[in-house]
Length: 385
Image (cartoon, rainbow, N blue to C red; front, side):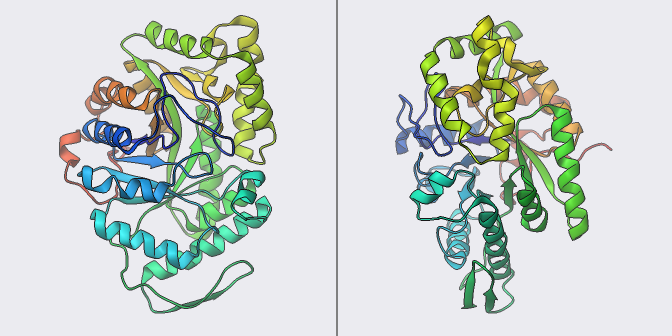
């Protein structure tokens, strides 16, 4: 189980923007507040915190580096955007992070789905070119981490000569990777360790896993699989859905319309799939009932009305949320990257409400068992089958 570090700010309400659009909350992302979230995630038994990248949030590397000394076992799933810095420098930064954190770095590779945002960083490649460059970039990084001597590489987008590292990261950081386009699947199957999908209904997720698994089989590789979701978990289902209703009722219709116009220009296939789930919010506009956006049992598409990227949440009682996690685990998911509004309080709700149920069912090792584990392995126990 992983949590999320909102380096753009936090709020008790849904926040509009993200993934190429400006985003901020009424709780600023100060170091003091982010330290509180990291401490809450650590004490709630989460393995790591996913930290985003983009023009709409604080820098992931610098922010997480400042949190190393105030945490003990919590790992940092840091977003790496290929192409904005050299692969040799990125490989070196990862090695430094592992050394200073005693092995608490995981990396989430973000190729970049928004052309307009990439251009603000000086990157004018199109989407398919970015994925091709990403493959070359990761190839160089993994060769450097292998430590088999100087690396010479001349590709279409990446070129290094006599590149090597003074220090090899120990352990080598696992690479998480998301993407729903054919180009994304090709890169994921060749280089990533864990393939991540945004939260779709179980049948759609199963299809994605089968797709990537088939591509990985061709490469002779075996991957882990994970999902990115928000969560609204309460003592009863009624309380959870009442909170979903509150979150939506606090939104100005103009905010929803503006967010949907922004998301409509996205070049991301994953973002298109998120929009397809909620259909622009017409069902909610007609009914004013949050459950009109329930696209699968306890899977709610309301977050995606205003937030780019991950736009679905598990909504229900602690037992119901545990049921859905178990269902996703059964189809092959190993990692669950969760978040909630606000991130501080919701991490405790999940840790105190849902996690004990998963432990009793044998899906999670008790938090105390893994308190000293810095190996980078998932907290999920091996499946019985």
